[in-house]
Length: 478
Figure 1 (cartoon, one colour):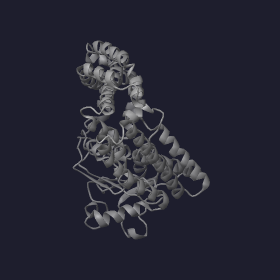
Figure 2: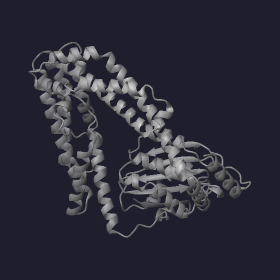
Figure 3: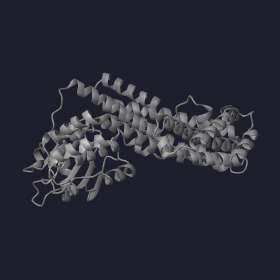
Figure 4: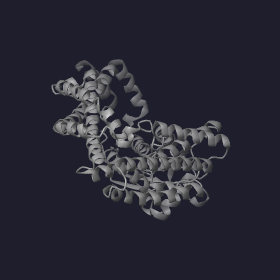
């Protein structure tokens, strides 16, 4: 290892000579104008704050929901003139000095990069930045795509000569000849260690919680009425609890002796991950058992147990208005809106009817299941209607419908309530799944359109309304 490092250091010194080291600068300011409403700021902002630029740079991120035919450069400039004049130079002819603007249209399927004169790069480099985001954006990963766009820009803007592709290419050859295998080996081992530590933290927390509640969990399981359809199905799921707990205890004893060095090994990381996954599952299982017992027996705490069963449905109903903003038909939109109003009233009525024993817990769960199935079908039909509105031919409509259905079937099944456990094969479509399905469908259609067209060229003009504006920037379609 020392010999490899010595060779690399000598090569680097010989090539750079007395070149000035580029200092890392975090963004001076981060401005987010998410008018399309597609970004997760809780993920985006910390990630962008941690990105290093070569010079102090103001980072702006702008999203809009436009049309495929739009001149994206022109639309970005219009928005800047109207809403963010600070993005434009004092003479109105360029982008402001120190600015790097990443723009995205998830509906019109366009992405653009714009820079102040002191931050501008070549058209080829702007295209490379945009192309680096295509894979994520085509999968409707808007936040990750924006982060990638900022990272790629930071790696190029004001890049010193010795970090140019030519020099990096030379050093890559040196590294490949002298130590690529070692570097990859060290990277993987350090990544394993970090992941392993996280697994142990989560596993220890969940295992301690399950262990502390073990007696109570068994008592709850023993008092769940097996005569209840839901009780019987939850108990069937519980039959493996003891075996799983023995396995997680065995794993806890093994991983407790792991050092950081041990965690660097792939086989040990696999055990740490199994420990965390199994402990987390058991933690969810004992909560499920407690809720099932409390609700079916109407014992202390049944109201909170019922709320936990209803909460996913209530959350979906609260998000229906955002779904209605998607293109669709008035008929499917009205059906969703009417159902939402009726279902919200039913949610308010269920606890009182349970408390007054007008309905049994089994009946309430049956009604909740039926309501979730009805919402699922209404969301599916609205997605189909949105597909019909978005597409321009029967073939495109079939393609988009197929992509929507595939997205629904692939969505992770994270909820572990009584209904989900009792009917594991039933897919309850959520509003989040609707959005993912719609994005997957539009991405598939756009991909087919791109395949049928010639490769798109970067657009650099600012349209008829741009006037004499000549700021450095371009856009392309993904």
